Amino acid sequence: MKKIFSIIFLLSAFTIACKNNSDTPTPQGATCDFNSLTQRAGESYDFNSDFSAHFSQSTRWESHSANITLVNGKGRLTANSGNVSQALEAWKLYKVQMPYNKSWEISVEVTIPTYWNSNGGNNAQVGAGIFVGKPVPSGQSSKVYECNMAVINRGERFVQAQLVANRLGDDPIDVQHTVLSQSKEMSSLKIQFCASNKTLSLFVDNVIVGSGKSIDSSGLDNWGLSGNDLMDVGVMGFAENTVITSNQPVIDNFRYTIY
Image (cartoon, rainbow, N blue to C red; front, side, top):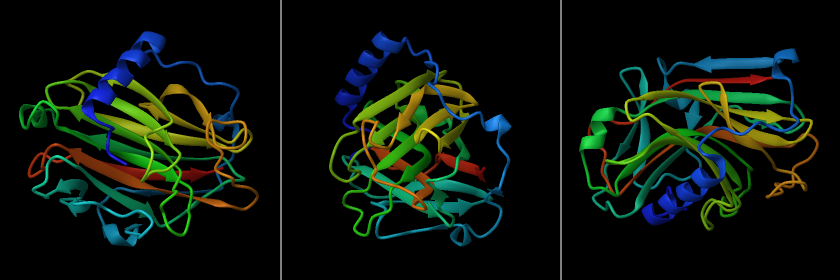
C-alpha cells in the first residue's frame, strides 16, 4: 500500500475531513477508563541499546527500500532508493505482542525536522509512527491500524490514523487526522486498545484524534480475533517522492503497558 495514497487523494481526503470535523478531535465513544485499570505488564525502550534486540524484521512486514536504524541513540528512518516516485516503507515488529482479551496501550515520540520542509519537490512527504496489525502467515492480507506523524513538503504537517483492511492491497477504509503547526517538530503518538469494546484509538500528545475504531463484527473491519489471540505492534516509517539522506524522521521512547 502506498504511503499515504497519492498526494491528490490525500488532499481530497483532508478536504472532506476538514469539512466534517473542522480538524477538531471528536469525542470518543464508550471506552475503557484507563486511569482505573491496574497495570499488569509494561516496558520502555529509549533506543539507547541494541535496536535488533527489541525490534525485528519479518517477512510479514517487509521493508521496501527504506529502513529504521539506531543512530546516536535514536531510531532514524533512512530511504536510500533512487526511485523517488514510489513509497519507500519500513516496518519493524516489537518483540512483544499485545493481547486481544486485555486492554493495553503503546506509545512513541516522533520527530520530523522542520528543515526537511525546504528540501524535495512539492509532492514529497515523509512520516513515522506506530502500528497494530493482525498476524497472518503470508502478510498479504495483514489488517492494520497505522498511526503516524507526517509532512507534505511545503504543505501540511499532520498526524493521522489509518484503518486498513489489506495493507498490501487496498487503500485505507477509514482515515482520521489532525493538522499540526508547521513549527511543531515532535509529537507523542499513543494507540489504546480497549478490550471491552474492541476499539483502537489514536492519541496525539494525550488528545484523542477521532473516535475509537472497533475491530470486531461491529466495526468497519472485523479482524476475526477472539480469546487469547495476539496482535502485532511495532514502529514504521515512509518516504514518498523523496530520498532521505539527512534530517531524518526520528522515533524515540517506545513504551507499552498491558492492563
